Image (cartoon, rainbow, N blue to C red):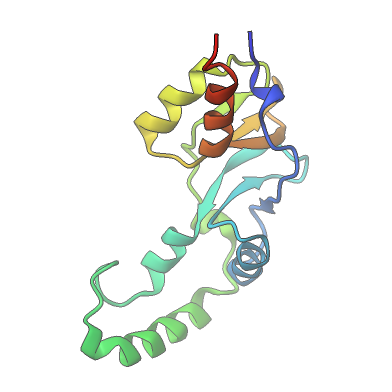
Amino acid sequence: MARVKDYMMRSLNSVCYTDSIADTIIYMHKTEMPILPVVDEENTFIGTIYSKNILKNIIPEQYGFINSQRILYDRNQAAENLSEIKSRKVEEYMLTKTKTIVENDNMDKIADIMLNNKESYIFVTNQEGYLRGYISRGDLLYYLLNNSDE
């Protein structure tokens, strides 16, 4: 039986709930990850921070519906709004009801979680709740490919 730990990515970037929004945005940019796991000082998984959640708090119009004629104003307004929140802590913008999976779980569990929750990444913990890595839709596809000839 294939386990999550056999397919997960162990190289993982995370932020602490006490990190600033500015540092988190820089980290998202450097790692090319629009979502990051949030941990405490002991590396216990406590939630996720999405770039989308930050954007929703700084774009003045309803998220996703920026009028193209007002784009310059909106960009300037968004930058101004970001300057007001950039020193705030991740804990103010993170989600804590994030689904995770345990590294010893069966890979068959992944498809249901990803498809039902529309998640591209699921963070993986050990039995004690410490962050161990993540698994992506690409990893799920690789697992399915490996099992397609059986």
